Image (cartoon, rainbow over the protein chains, first blue to last red):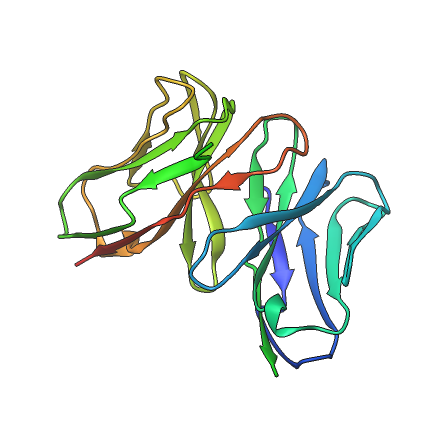
Amino acid sequence: GQQVMQIPQYQHVQEGEDFTTYCNSSTTLSNIQWYKQRPGGHPVFLIQLVKSGEVKKQKRLTFQFGEAKKNSSLHITATQTTDVGTYFCAGGSGNTGKLIFGQGTTLQVKP
Amino acid sequence: NAGVTQTPKFQVLKTGQSMTLQCAQDMNHEYMSWYRQDPGMGLRLIHYSVGAGITDQGEVPNGYNVSRSTTEDFPLRLLSAAPSQTSVYFCASTRGGVGTEAFFGQGTRLTVV
């Protein structure tokens, strides 16, 4: 079945450093979504990418979808303590709304 | 709007007991799903439903049953709880279709002793 792998599992950075998490799918995706989960909270939708090679930005966050629609990345520039949490990618296939999540990357930011 | 409501927030069960985790959404979403979250494993799909009366298995369905008698409700049943089912459970709903965002409930932290 479809698998979505995400690396790294954990990342500790000093405030102000950059951060990147990578997501790879075993199958071609119709779309990829990114979610953030704060400690003790529930996942919250950040963004969705649909087109091959698509790049989207949200302030300090940059999201990319690979040309083959099998991989994606999230890059945070100049991390802040408010960026702490676990970032998940989720791959969609077909048009049912079914999402398969990666294992997540937990980001710790030292002030 | 309440969004996605899960109850209970916390539960302790003894091995072999049964229980139902409740999930309700008021957004008229067609698609609902249940995930479990374990350290290092991310969110794993247990069961999902594309509409009332239709359910299907996800990645880790064993030990869990679901039903979808209405659009709003999607309960998850543990028939005979096992310690391996200790986890945080999240219910989610989406409008359905390609690229619609998932709205998650607050989660249920379940411990099986």
